Image (cartoon, rainbow over all chains, first blue to last red; front, side, top):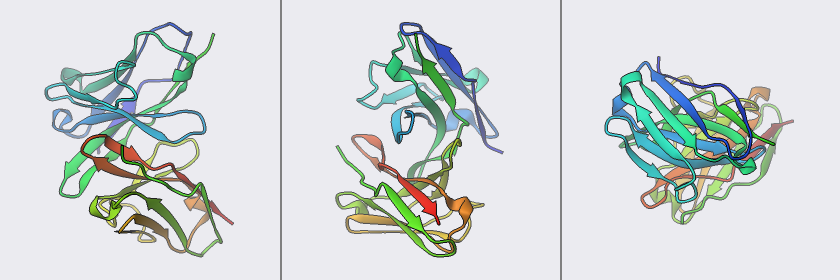
Length: 121
Length: 107
C-alpha cells in the first residue's frame, strides 16, 4: 500500500527556520517525483515544486522559487520542504503528493495527510 | 500562464446530478484530472485523464472534456459527496495548474 506520511504540526515565530518531511512507503521511492502543495486557510491548492528523489532533480513554481527549498534523502525515502526565514504569510497546510506521469497525463495519485504550519509572533 | 476557472459553488439536491465545470483555453487538448477534498482532509484523486476513475472511486463520478470546458459529474449525489473539488492540468511551462476550486453542497 502506497503511503506518504508527513511530519507533525509546527508553530513557529517569524524569522525562524523550519524543515518538514514526507516519508514514502509501499513503492519505489526513487522512481516517482514527489511534489509539494500549499493550501492557505480557506483557500485553494497551489503547486510549489517537485523533486525526483532518484537524482534530486528539482523544479519550482515561479511563485515559490527562492522562497523555499525542496530536497530528498533517498536512503530513508523522505522528501523535505524547508524555509530559512518564515513569515506570517507562510501559515498554511502543506501537502506532499506522489506525481504520476504516463499516457494518462501528469497528476498526483497519492497524497500525504498534510502538515499545518503556523507562523505567529 | 495557463489558468483554470471553476464556479465558486454548486448546490445539488440529494439523489440528483451535480455538474462542476472547469474552463481553460482549449482545455480539450489537455488531460484533466479532478480531486475531491473533504473538510479537514487531504485531497483525493477522483478522476484522471478526463474520465477515468481510480480504484475505489464510485461509478457515480464521471468526467468529460471538450473544447474550452471540462466537466466533473456526480450522479445520485449523496451527503458524503459534500466537498471542495479541484480540476488540474499539466502545462509544459508552468507544470501543475490547479483550478480555483468548487464547493459542492448537497441539499
